[in-house]
Image: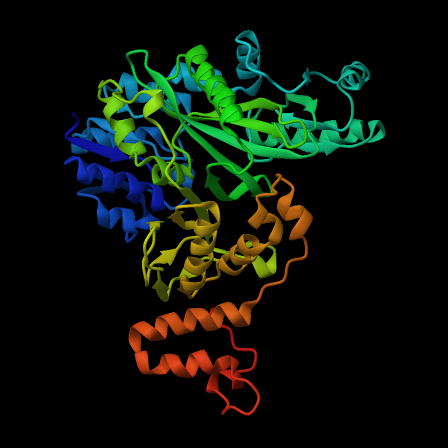
Length: 500
């Protein structure tokens, strides 16, 4: 087993990896930018090395500086977390050449699966279902439109070399195709340096279902059940859950078998995620892509299976065989994850950097936090705005949903804005409570959403004051006093906002 691991990341995922390392008796090394010198992941690590200026291209994306930090500290392995260099084949290759173990799949596998077209062709060759579609190359839109006509409208144009919604367009009518294709190709070129796009049949009631997979170096591979990730804003997930409310045992088994076939077809090793699109009408499913890393939403899988995915990653990277069998993997109860971002949902989800003045995290049975910040920490402007992940587990979906709503109501962050109020409204929506989800859920129900800032701010103040001045809580709680009751001073504050 490794004695020392360098975590090539920051924020909550770096902290989460380090905590498993500590349980395993493994020393940890943090790397950090100048903007992160006082960050929580730096404080959690046994050693820390500054690798550059604040901008990611000068620090967290510098392969040479990360490898130099590993050499300097004697780290035997590197865990990339998610984002940054986690899915960069050159990084995995550079680790191999430097004699440092990359905790993830081999560079060749990352390279192969990182190209959606290559992955798509591989899946087709192994009988894994893919959506009907066609690659568009060059400027011959006449030929392209003929091919698309064979697929049938509506269609989805997607960048071949990337994701995250960049280079993606939904086209409802043939007359809109030319402009959408050119825009998608231009955006793909700017984002990924590759203008290739492909077009696939658009599913009108799509659900995003992904399967956690794990494979060792000895030929053992299995899946660790599914996650429903349909609640997305601008193609980015904000709430995840497991089990999926739409899958029955038979469909789960079919999709799980397909996910494991993806692993075997690609020679995958370590933890990864196979993503599928499920047609809510027909219940047909189609391969989307493979994420060759640990997912942001991995804690919900850990909650229902009782497994530590980071520990499994480390053990596999160290050459140990999986001792799990597929029949050993069962879900106990239901879990949700909500992502807590430094964003202001009342103003178009604009970034909300700044200092966290107070932080109150909910407590109680079945509640877990993966947190990357603390009270008085500074949230920089340079990185992904995720602050933390709130995970709850309950015996049933409804019990877990109610527990999440209660936990969100306890969540207090003063000094910056977060989407906690938005998340509460989503979790309490009737369609969400029924599990009636598609990837259009937020567009269908939450376009034009307005914040309930007064209610949420008042709740935040109450919880913070409860910590500092318990006697004051009664006064805050009476902020919504009814007619005939003595007015609370909180009702006379006018337009005051806690973040200002």
